[in-house]
Length: 204
Image 1 (tube, rainbow, N blue to C red):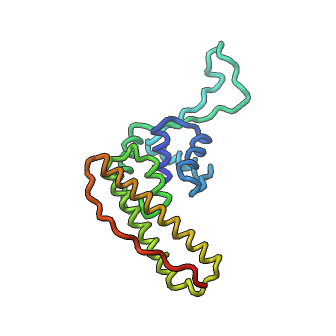
Image 2 (cartoon, helix red, strand yellow):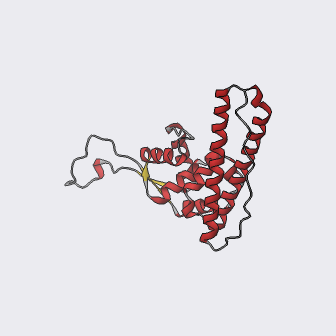
Image 3 (cartoon, rainbow, N blue to C red):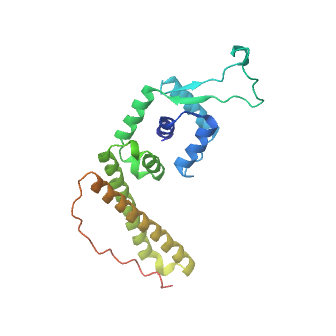
């Protein structure tokens, strides 16, 4: 996941380490905390593999004599993606499997780079994510049916909030899927089904 995120960000523009870490936090949406202790080893491995290159600051001794004086701030190493890195990025996007939608963090990373992803792959990921979330919703509803008699009012409200959140994600994913099908001309008639009513959470 980290490799995909780094390649995707550097595909957009070169970045130095601090900027890359900040952008990674935005892409991952706070789901993962990226420390320098994990970022820089990953960058080193990717550089050795030829996926990225680093541009070291030019030492003062190598600058022209009439070059302006350097500031006191240390120069930053800038990382850029290579042609091999772009090929690897495309490969990671096109070969997305169940891990790209079963895990919330991986799904978020893939979604962030959907503009670089083929339409059929986007649809596969979105439909897979919806199935995953629907299974979560079914398990949550079944759990509530079994335990609601033993839960107090506040715990029931917390469980209802969780169920509402899952329902919203299913609706959001359905909207994205419908949009994808409409954009590439593969829209098919949808059979509207009346959703099952949520469990009665008012009983204490």
